Length: 236
Image (tube, rainbow, N blue to C red; front, side, top):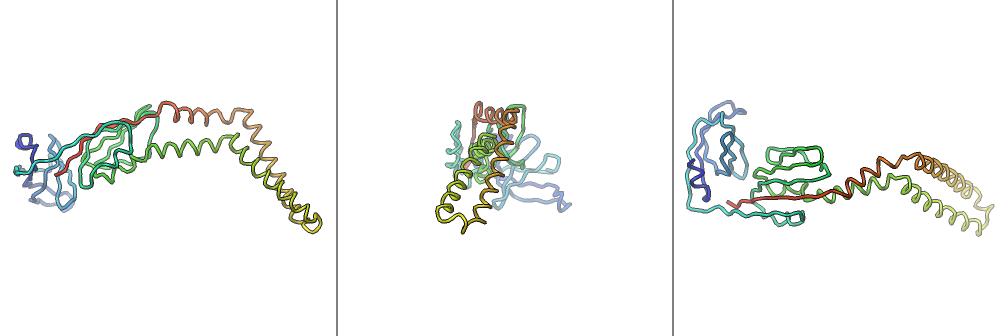
């Protein structure tokens, strides 16, 4: 309650708590990021601490004369997150629809995956910890491109391109003298046969529906993907 009444101002806290790593009682002064019923988010020497209620033996909140700067940022343009100032602490929610980004859980970035959505909760995260969130759309586009390259039609097109280059090389060597370049032409002819065999196999796979699961995943990633965020960031 002391903190709630003074939350617009920079607050300190003298905390006596049980340090589970040191296995002893400790009394320290922290900067208060926020106090919740079961957790205290604290700062000391630019390091964030999360103390559980059961470990806190005594706490005294001290209000300073400095006000805390609170700003809000919401929308869907991830590039705007680059504007988050260094040294700020970011809280809020990012909702990603129809895509599961590769973001690991930390005490300050919590990822929960649902059937169609991924909810990313930020709890006093530093701006550099949001870099993977900014890269979500780029990551998704890269995944779509990788899936497209696996499609039979894409692989066939790549092989056809290689086939054309080899035909051109054979034609060039033949003009310069087939017999004097026989071994190279023979090697290239063997490569052409291998390419044609791969093309034949891919065409059979395509006819049998091998691309259907890939195309469905591409369609899901391309169609209903979206990102929305509602964030608050603090400057102490």
